[in-house]
Length: 116
Length: 109
Image (cartoon, rainbow over all chains, first blue to last red; front, side, top):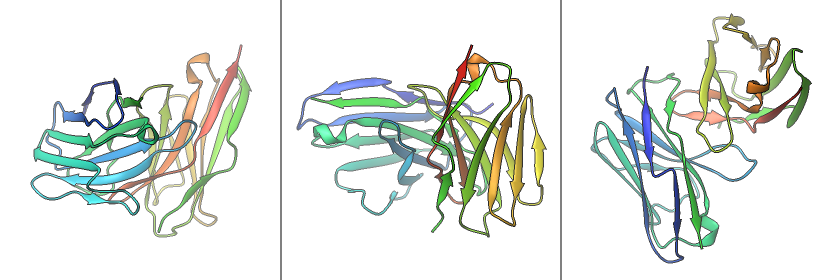
């Protein structure tokens, strides 16, 4: 079945630095990838939709200049948390779809970001 | 927009008993629903899905029921096992997924 690989699984960074998270579709081409953020004991909140070769679409309240998304190929999307602050500490999860609606997207294993 | 909610935040169940997790959604035009299982520190894992032209679908030890009249769906887990302990989310799928708040299932031995 479809596999999505996310890296790193855990990262600790200093406040003010930037962190890049990668999301790869291993056995299919993902025209659309999604980035979610999940705080402890809460649900997944969609941050942005990443379409290959075009600009990402951000959800309301998500700062596009802080959370940079690049989807340069059909198998890779990256999320860069710029100038990270402790409040950005969260669990970030990506998912990938194959370009059609009503698709039960495949999720990566998540990245635990801790900003100290 | 779509909102999806859950009736119970935590469900404690005895091993071997059946579990029922409920979910409500707001958009009557929604036509594809998915249940996910999330274990601690991992991404969501697909369990079962159902389209609006069905009211019941069964998988291995799991059944999803959809009541479009009251915009409600449920996930039933038969003979709950310790490995079923996790957080369960319902989600509505369209151009993007909208998740419910999640229910934590704790299986007591």
